[in-house]
Image (cartoon, rainbow, N blue to C red; front, side, top):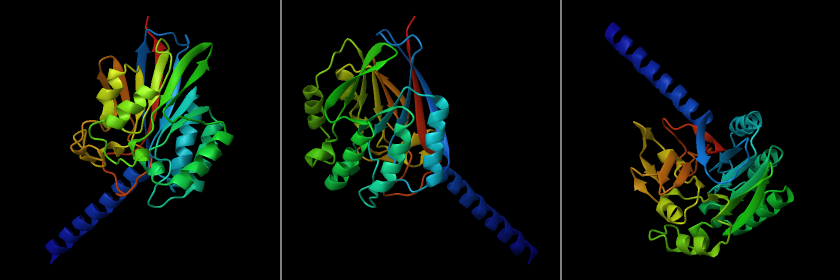
Length: 281
């Protein structure tokens, strides 16, 4: 009798701890910090960048507030948003607009859309119109020159393949064509914003200095530092979170703020990324 009671108490305790842990994993924010050095001309004080990705019109007010508060504390020069501000399955443009409104008060914002915006044409048009009113630069296979403390840098934005009705551009054909269509001064420090990390080698061939991506949601469940599944990459994906390097190009992949089809994360808290760019000595 006592043995049954003890086992029952232990099982209940394990269940409660699991619930608390899952809640913590899915409602708390984790900052990631990276440094990058370049021989190209940038401000002597460096450049500080915040990255937001995969917000998915997150209705967790505390999480959105925490992200905005953290960005304010870091005093960044620019904020880059790498797609999926809205979610195509439960779209609420208002939530995304309110979040962008807060961000636009903190720094200059640059944005590229993800596959979820591409599935919602009218909602995406509304979101773009709102962002442009708030001074956000929307990049669609285009480039913009940003001046930070007297030094110019390029920001290039890549249109997601889903805008061409392609969910999985396995060959990278549309990505390659999009990259070829953008004109910019390659002598300047150049940042690429693209939703999808699986095309990293395509980005590296174009010799971008720094690339920001999302889409992989950190692999959803992370075991021993590896993600288990990511859209566009499948099981045990290669690019899910953190820093990757190839042929002189560095890619930073955010684990994202919100969730989409699958609502739970494990060992994979919502992610806010900060990157500092400095001139090599």
